[in-house]
Length: 471
Image (cartoon, rainbow, N blue to C red; front, side, top):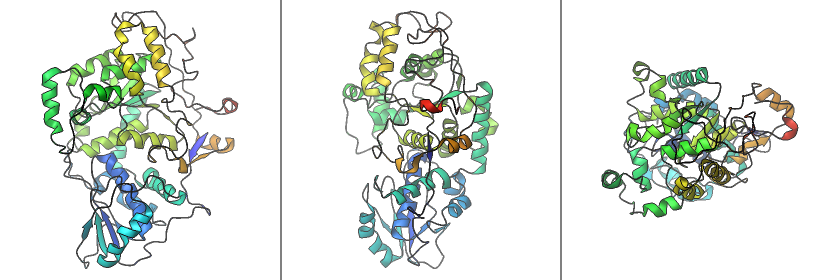
């Protein structure tokens, strides 16, 4: 079993003394939505550590597509953020009053520690206050272990949501658990801005092309794309119906409860109808909470995103429909906290399966889906050490634990496998349990195994530990 281990040790001590250079302040202006800003905040702490500067609480992006006026203290617990990192970096809420002008500059993407010392440190020593603008992914992916562990301490421990967000998020998790002992959280990511940015075609004809084309003009640097080529290369989010079919093929029955994290879905209820037909137990913030409960959040996209983040993190299985910022950060967080399952569609390989689905039986379709999804089902060793984006695969912060440690850390509450019934049918018929139950060719009569050889709602354990520990 694997657990997070980002604490400092003798080998990897706290990253730096607090503000070795007096009167030097580092500021950052984050960019993008909540989770993109989260990566920027995490990397800003590490950058301040590299520069031995005092970090000023970051400014959140209030001018981007989402136009959210929230500041840092309305999303995250400022006092906790400062105190929990006090041994690594000195952090202040604001600049001292008697300070000179702020010098603005931008560092290149994936800037290394050497890059920061060469580009930023001279300006910092001369100007005393430097603000790094559009601070998103401005720090190298690969760093020395001590700095990577600092990244994890920031992301997984110091960045704690405010009490009001925590209260609402936990309330929704509790309400989901009351409906079912286990549930799926789906980050659908089928909002108009996402589809416009992707340049993909979803069969809406001229109306869709005009609407999404208008949105694409907001990004002046985007080039026109070939929708069919993008889909063939796996760069298009699956439609809600395709996500539903994939999950049914993987063995999730219609009795499963799904929490959908999403903003405004392009096409509205008409687009969601096929997914809801496959999974009638369909939930969201809006169905679980009253308008009054959401009133203090609903006008702020970052606060709504924070609630979705919490519920997705609290799910038994997290399904992501694209490899965006929220998907990567949550996948990394779920790896860090004991490898809770995260399923990613292998969109490149699923392309041909969905394209030809009407010409094959459900049995053949489900078999192809399961085959194509191997390696994308959230197993601990799917991603090799050091590969991929660090926020998605924080390998430097994950340790293999002993049985005794696991006994203390893991909840001893086994999850029952979902029963799945079988019956042969073709895609030419409507897939609803009310008419006929879906076929799942590799299920035993007792309904307790899947084509992958494990329960999809539990983490895969080493065989010798299965009798010792339960999830």
